[in-house]
Length: 128
Image (cartoon, rainbow, N blue to C red):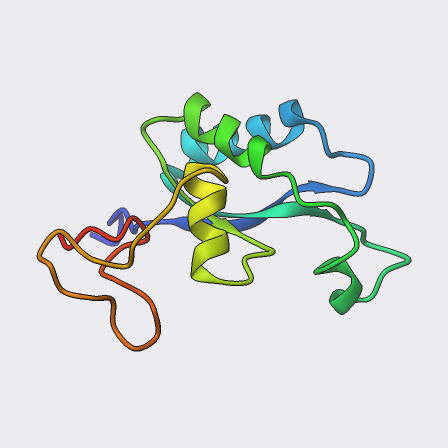
């Protein structure tokens, strides 16, 4: 029987050209959940312009909208989401995820320091 269900993950942006509302991306995610059983998403927190911008410009020009990705996370708690786009450092990623007032001392719960790249076992600095 070749009817095995394969796991599906999708990487997408939050919008395309003028289709960049929360409803647009939420409907897209809902359709992928319902029709493909997708529960893993990598969301680039910028929309894409299909004409007028080069691929390099599309990585910088459209504004980042991390709150829209967080809204998706709240709307689809059964799914896992990774945020993509604009992360310049681990510290920046932590601030996006946990707020700009969060401070990390670089020490894991185990008492060990982060590895040479500055990355612990997860972005929270916990050692799971």
